[in-house]
Every structure is written in C-alpha cells, then in structure tokens.
Image (cartoon, rainbow, N blue to C red):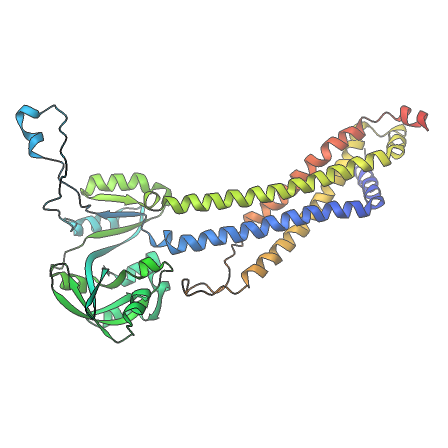
Length: 419
C-alpha cells in the first residue's frame, strides 16, 4: 500500500482527535524534559562530588604502611615451624616510612605507557602552635606544578598564589578552616613543632579549601624541599608516590603489580573511594527510575487514547478494510499515529529539558564550603538527549502496538452489519 496514503489517513485521524493527541504528547514531553533535567543535574552533581574527593585522589598510591613485621621469632623457631602461631599485641618496629629507591621507581613510572603522570609527596605529622595550645595537623610536601596538572591543586587555593610557595623559602599554604581557627592571615608566620620536638617557623602564603572542613582543619602544603628540611631528612626522602593512570579501571590490577614490583604498599582509587562510587551509582539509578516511571505513565495515556480512537473510528476502519486496506495497513496507520505522538512529544521534551537544564545551571549556588562552585552543576551530555528521544519512541511504539493490532483484526462485515 502507498505509504503516503497511509500517512495521510493517519494524519486525518490524528487531527480528528487533536485535543487528546496533544494531551498524550504533553505527557511524553513532560517525561522526556524531566528525564533530561534530572540526568543532567544528577550527573553534574556526581562530577562535582567526584571533583571534591575522587579527582584529587591518585589512581594508585605507593607508600609504606605502618604494620608489624610478618617475620616473628616464634615462626623461625624450628620446633614451631609448620604450626599456626597466634601472637597478640604486636607492635611495629623499625618501620621505614620513606620509599626505598624512589628515584628508580619514578624513572620506571615515566617509561610506563599506562601511566599518565605521577608526583612525589612527603606526609609529615606536626603540631601547629596556637598560643599555649598545639593543634594536630599534617604537612604535605608536594611538587606544586605536578600536583596542579594531575590533581587540580590550584583550583582549591582560594587565597594567595601557588607560585609563592616555591618562590618564597620556608613558606606554607594552610587549610582555610585551620587558618580561621588560628586567626592567621596571609603574610603571618606560623610556628610548627615536629613529632621530634623541633620548632620551625613558616610564612603563610595562601589558603587551601577542599570543601570538606575536616580536611581543611588538618591539611597544609609546602614544597618537598621545605618538608625535608623540617624533618631533617636528605633530598631523596619521599614517603608517597601518587600515580594517575590513562585507564582508571585498571587501577586495582596495576596497584597489585606495582606493590609486588617495587616492594611497597599500594592503594588503588576504587578501594580508597568505594563509598563515593556507590553513592554516584545510587543517584543515577534513582534518576533513571523516576524518568522511566514518568514515561511509563505517558505511555499508558497514549494507550488509552488510541484505544478510544479505535472504538470511535470503527466505521472508518471497516470502510478502510472494505475498500482494500489490509489488517497490516490499518496496524501501520495506528502505529504511525502513536510514533508521531512520541516523536513530537520527544522533540519538545528535548527542547524543554535543555531549557530547564540551563535554568538550573544559572541558579546561584554559593557556599563557603565550595569556593569554586558558583551555580548548580549541570552536565550537558549529548547521550542523554539521544537516550531520551529513543526512549520516547520505544515507549510510544509499545503503547500503540496493542491498540494497532486490535484495529488490524477488526472484521468489516461485523461492523457494517451492525450498522
């Protein structure tokens, strides 16, 4: 049968029930618009949360964990070999925090094609002297350039310049919460005490704010050379090597490989931040579930409208079949009506979803905990729009399939005889 003729008949039936068809299309439009807006906002929120923690976490971290020596004298004693020996209250001894032979390790990492980049770090426990009170804290000795390229360090420095930490000797960037507690301003000198009891003055050149107050209350940053000087360590003293990979999903396997090859402990990002990935997945499942529910409700609306249309147009269907139209032709007519509603409603849904996403993205969202965020986060991923239009067509096709099959099975003789 001529497709143009079928399309013309479908158009006539659609116009005859224009108000009901518009209601069905509005249902699809609303469902798709909410799907686009929710997915854009939820994934944008996930990216924001990932930026706060996961993007600043190395894919693989090499370090030496503080733990007891696995080789205990009782296990070496000839009489107890081959037995299970239970030893309580083991204490670590002679633990080497520094990574041995770190220069060769970093040279090997530089040649590894799976590694996007790496940066050395020194972590040192200190006390910040605030009058008669000592505040527990951590000084991180970093290479500011590498840290900024790999882990966006510069984005979280809310006052001062990162370059000053390198240009001004014996300088430090404090966590903003810690600086507020100590009433410290840029240019002031803060006194620190190491765990060995050595006091050391450092000039404050900036404030760091991660968005997590507990971190900003403890963490501070200075250069690797300054940290080595504070601890009285040589120039090759490094406690951590933070690695960023080209493929994040390979982190667990590569971490095990590096731990075995370099004789260090290794932690992968999946292990370090499992709770954040779980939260992101839960939020995505919720948003997809709500969107599916909205489209399902719209699909039932289309199903009811097409059912009513078939009952009202029994005479027209009978005449079509009596004049030579087959059951499949009639089925195609009603499926065309259903898909037309889905296409028009879906396209309008994409438009309104985009406009709604833009509206959300322009709503001010300013908080002291997130200095780099000015508006609500939105992710304009084209995949959401492709999924949206395909989902609307699939939903409306399934909604129109049963009524279309029912129309195709109408017996014109019974209808005409009844009249």
